[in-house]
Picture 1 (cartoon, rainbow, N blue to C red):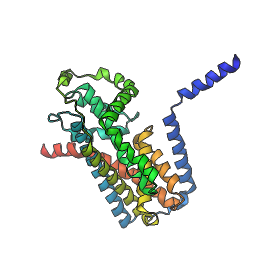
Picture 2: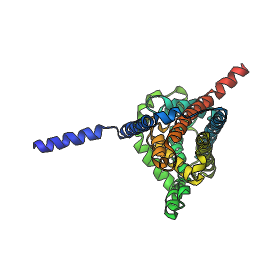
Picture 3: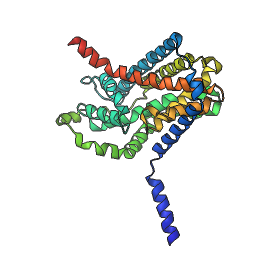
Picture 4: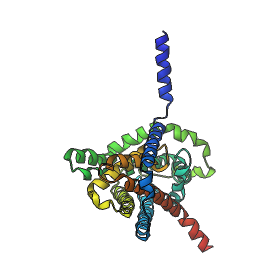
Length: 316
């Protein structure tokens, strides 16, 4: 009896552990240990005018990727049969993207949902929020096989594009809604009086999202170019094939997307890159590249969020 109670206590404690947070903390420890072990070499890394030029290129490509991502979301919303003529989807995306840095990592979704539901049905608002990360995931998987050109990996990763076929898509939407039911229940009290507009007529036909997915693929590639600029800033880009580099980047980015205990996959993304490439590239320059890329990404997010406020300021 005592043994059963003890086992129940242990399993109860395990169930209460936030797995995503635990993984993130382990990744932070891994990165911290690597920085500590390479501190002297890191301090010897020089950032001159050429390096600044490369990092500026990284900011430019990362900034453009956010704009591209906003358009992919707009095309996705149109694809699910919504009329967005009364909404500036690009503005909504850019203004809320910065909220992902707030504790919890869900506030950009909440803000978008509360804005969309003023003009769209609650069902379609939820659908547009849930499908966007899946679209990003599939777009990232397309690049993963480029590292090995293994036919099985190609089939496994590229078959993810079948998720958006009407039959699979309806099944996924139902599953995602049931998995995220608590998320939308918690924010249900934030209804606006204007939400009466929810009852607009919506086309029930489903079309494969060729356009949103194509634009999302360009987004991932633009994101990679920003990372490549940071790698080239420390002169290690030529030491590895571009195919392997984009495959590793995409895999790390996907894992960072799936484990969102920290904003933008902070710690997780860097750990996957470091673990995968440290045997191919000198560790200190790779660490410097990763730290700079995190800074570049954050600056890009801030700049993207300022586009419409600055435009309004100049118009005023």
